[in-house]
Image (cartoon, rainbow, N blue to C red; front, side, top):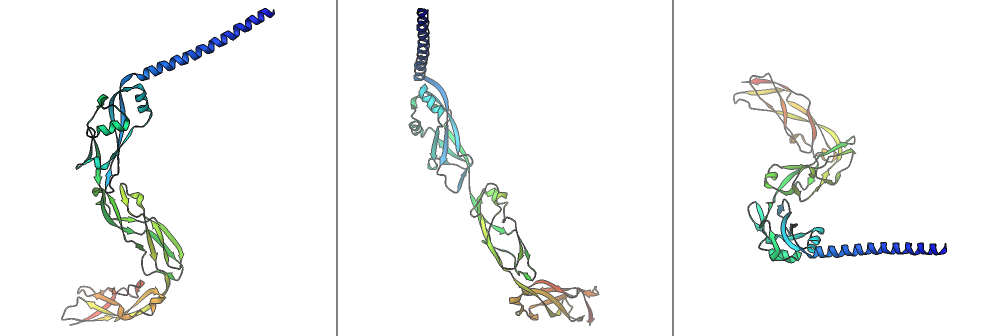
Length: 316
């Protein structure tokens, strides 16, 4: 019994060793075969990327990277490395020929530098094309108006005699000439201020997302709105008749009109009736005239007349 067990144990150990030896021999043979195959030369087409660098600021290239197929006769090792890693070649802008619609790169002219970069054999290389053409356009610049999209709700008794001011009033943009011709202004983003009783100031972004393929030299502006306490005032102003025939003399009823207005407390004492002019245009076929305020201080708001028509009598 003991002899049989020993015989079986020896047989099992030999089987295991033969199996491991077979696997080792198979792997080793496979590696030798792969090495031999990769050492051979093959004809294969490999794609290379050519990307433009150091582009001047006033030129925009539509697509900076383009691919070219090279027909190579190289070892399997070399072809494997070329396919595993990205093959990018950077072209300095100064090496391009600038034409009306294209930037042209001569592949044959720089072929020695290209094969040196990728460690290729120039004699075993064939190009599928001789040049690369990159579409481009030159940037134009212009200044456009900034329009504030700002709303304000004042606290009772407060107001402003002006609209929001933005600084700068104009901003510079660049892009294709055909695109810039269609652009005259840009708005700020929308913002509302509530319960305002003091001067507003700050910075706000321009709404640049509405403009495709346009570069903004600045994307924000400053804004300001002077706010002051307001009060109401009234003045009596004589009526002036215009377009009156030389032979006629007109008497109006009434002879003066009352103008009500609102202004800041700081300006109230400066207001004088002589700063206002109210005119009525004489029309022979009408029974009354319409009074209009044609002159008034710019620091006033909400101007109103106490009457909307004026009777008159013509003396010839």
